[in-house]
Length: 124
Image (cartoon, rainbow, N blue to C red; front, side, top):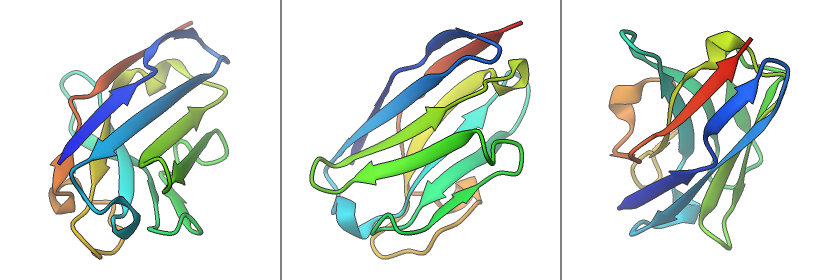
């Protein structure tokens, strides 16, 4: 399985960024996809997840209403649109996939595959 994130970078508080993740080597349409983030010295935290069909989405309280996760099963991609960014959103963001037919989870230990991460830095 290979997950490759793109779209990270520097943004000002209140700005927007869009992260994308290209997946290969898995049955994408049968895999729950998620985004996690990890700030320096902190644990890896759940950000968002999306069901296999894309009909259901799940968010951490800290990003609800600002971030939107989506997927394109025809292109094997998952995206995270981040609006109204805050300084505390600064972290490395990871794309991740659960195992085949596994349900949505907010626990990083239950995700099987991970991308290399992309840095998001929000300045005040």
